[in-house]
Image 1: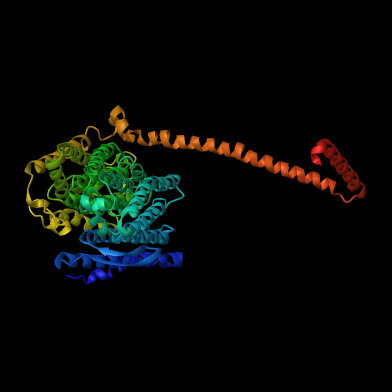
Image 2: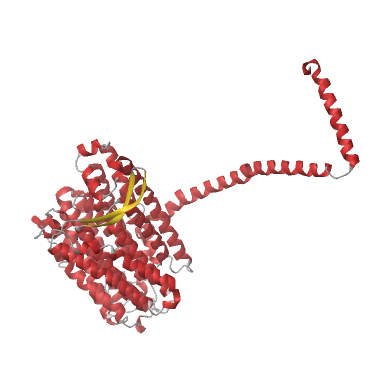
Length: 631
């Protein structure tokens, strides 16, 4: 069946791009209309995305691809266009919906900011870049938008550039993600060399990597396929904040909170997961590559969760939670459970955006991010508290909220294929529930902390609470799209049926881990918790180790930053004293000769005669010295 609405999909990234151009062209003259234009453009893109997704869910049309020749060099032809599949139709709705809610939320959050128009322009460009990435039919176009997303994240993280921490975080995000991007670029170059006619569209890649014979016909061995997959995954590691390139993501919290929700919930960090899913045919031919993806994802999940359990900054807790949940998604992809990984990306977008926006509501009201300086906000911010509780329970995997179903799908896949990863996943569920309980109880229950402004706090405005309510509803019900009792979502997404069997043991263990984590959090940090003050934590050496993020940043500073800075100083000295020294010697000699010549050419006849006499005498001496050989 031919799609009708898909042919208009090119308009989805163009609409926010036009908003960016208008806001940039008119600048502060549109300060009053910037909010309306930002909300309208994202809502229009969201509406068209929903219509396309609905058409694909109800009419089952064929995949739609439209490309045109971008430029040609000899026989090499590069194309630019858009591609609509079930996977990216789902991604379009996720990105545009969260973007719309973030735009609405930002109306009150950024009110009074002198650069509000610039803020909405950056969001529009970022949204357009992410949508362009999702719609890309080939790797070259994807890479272009991939880099544009990185540039936009630099602008948004460093939006408050007058703050040194924001400037440093923006530079760190840009540099660290570039490390992964180099790997992706090398993978693209290798594929460009080996693909038939140098075609890099995803359909051709799927055909070439369909089996060993088709790979061999194009000169791609299993070992080379592993290298290509590993390099692609390196790009995903950078964008999705996986270990060891995870350090930029928590620091990105220096940006405005709505940006944290946009970047960490549905857009930039999801791009790495989307990339692996989009190129999954390359990974599937290499068991080694699959093991790498699953191993890195599983380790990142438990590693980041443990760090989140010891943080005091509300946004950093959620940032490390994002790193952990992205590890879950990568683990699922590495286990071959593409449906489970994308399903968790889908549910995570809603409850993580909810949690970040809820945190922004709290921070906007109390003007601190330290959870030990809050307390008792539940009675004063009821909408924020209840919606935040729904998001926290969904993240903790408590049924029947969405996070339970998506985590259960991942743990069921691990139960079948790798018991070690299942144990890692189950322990991560426990830690996740614990740190979310710790966060919720310290912020919303009990009495206000000494010296806090909690007594004067009031609920946020409707433009901030409305997105919270919408996301809370989605976080509650989105999980029913895919349950263990129905494989319809998997069949629709990629043709498999992972819901045909129910793993009761995995489900029970997951729920118990979540409940125990919440219980432990309540025991320590509830209204009468023994560690509510935070003083006992600081005396624990292991707590200090985890609170300092295992000193990974300090280790990188020592091994990479200082060593490269030292090498830079050595090269600078070599350039200054050796290279520049030689240049100075040569130039000095030339200048000296020139000055001597100017003294001789002074316009005095007697000087010229004397020099002629000396020259004639030197010529005679030279001839006599050569003797007979001259003749």
